Image (cartoon, rainbow, N blue to C red; front, side, top):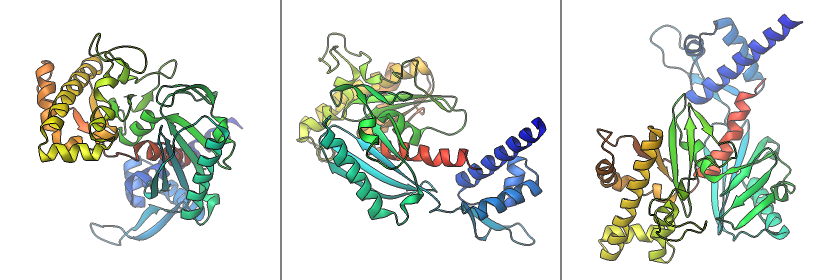
Length: 373
C-alpha cells in the first residue's frame, strides 16, 4: 500500500512538472519536455495524453525541428480556466480577467469610493459578477476571484487587520466574499503586484510599490517573505527625514510622505499623467518637485540595497513612468552608495495600473497547474 502511494505521488509530481513546463514555455514539444525535465519519454507521452484528454493541453501544429519528422507543438488550452483579479483602492476598483495562459483578456478601472458598508461590498460584488458575465461564456470555468487590498491582512483568519489607506481596521473579509459564488482570495496590494514582477527561480528581490501609498514586498529565494505578523515590506514607513513631514501613520519623515504618487499628482489636480506631461514640457515648478522626489527615492532605494543586497524593482503608479528617468535615479543612488560599482540592480516594473489585480489572479492560475491531477 505504501509503495502504491509513493508511485501515485511520483506520478502526480511528474504531471505537475510537465504542466508547469508547458505553461511557462508557451509552446514546446514532448522531446523537449523529456530532455529538460529528465522524465522518460513513455512517462511524458502518458501524461500528455491525459492532459489533452482533460482539456488542459492541446497540439497546435508542427514544432521546429533540426531534421526528421516534425514534432507536434504543445500548448495550454487558453480557455480551460479563467481567474479574476480585483484591486480595491480608496477611490477606485480595478478588475482584470486572465485566461489559462496568463493573458489579460479584459480589464476595467471604475471610480468607486471605499466604504465599510454592506451596500459597498454588495455593489462591488455585483460589478465583479457583471464583469465576468460580460467577458466569459462559461462562468463555470472561473477558478477564483482574487482581491487586492492596501493593508495588513491575516490570511488564515480572513481579517483585514489594518489599512491606513482605507482608514479601517479589524474587518472580516467575509463581508465581501459572501456575495461571490467563487473561491475568493485576499492579499496585500504590494504582495500581489510583486507576484507579477518577481523573477522565477531562487532569486531574492525587493519590490518597492510607488502608489498613492508606498509599500513593498520581499522575495527570498523565490518566495514572498511575509513576516511573522504579515507586516513585512512596509517600506513606506521607514523614516528618511527625522522630524520631517507628518505621515498618516502618526510618525514624522516616513518614505510615504516623500515618495508616494500623491507627492507628484497633488501638483496637477490629482492627475499623475498630467504631472509627467508638464515635466516633459519643462514646467520649472514641476521640475523642482520631481528633483526633490528623485532625491528621496534615491535615498530610499540606497537604504533598501544596503539592507537586503539584492535587485530592486520599482513598481506602482510612479514605477510606470520611471523608465525615462532611470539614468537620473541611478546617478543619485550611486552618490549615496559607495559599495556598488553601478546601479544595474534597479529596474522598473512591467505592470502599472493593473499590477495588483493581475498578480492575485495569476495566483489562481498557478495553483491550478500546481494541483493538476
